[in-house]
Length: 210
Image (cartoon, rainbow, N blue to C red; front, side, top):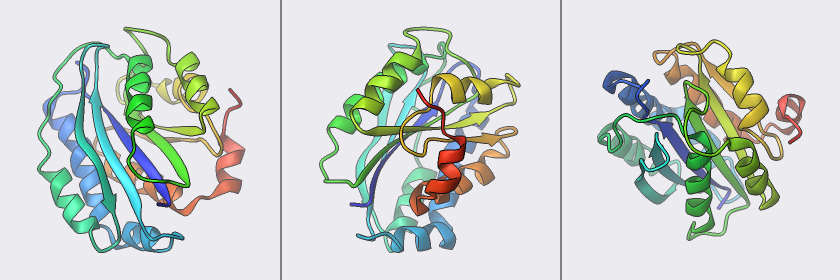
């Protein structure tokens, strides 16, 4: 398995239904894209594992999709699954620290041997509930997990800087920026390609040092 990738999606009160489904539709479109499928096929084992977590308040988290093996050939089916994924979490505060904690538990239970383990956090705000994310991020990095971020800047203009300082970490960690939820489609494809292709030089230049 080339990479175990956990996609953690913001479902807090700042994210309305249309915005939430722009996230899941964007992921669906990315996995249906031939360029992303080619990147999966180019990996050493030609296989990745993907799971999806939705999160908001510390007590509102849901594993929407358990670990799935995805190849270039099965990516269209995974894309269809994402396109039809319902919203399980509605409203609540922005608990990035708690989300990372739950993501770490899910990552510890991935049923496949993976060369890399990556938590991919998407969101449009800073922590407003629960523990701060940085100490939890540091513990994940110490266990060999990379945390990347997709910051959606429509609610808070400096959320990308917050993600850089407080959320991401590990080898080659980076923040991808979406200008708004409509821009999520472009951003998630670019982010997945970067993660799948392992662009270490570019990533290292933008990685913080937790």
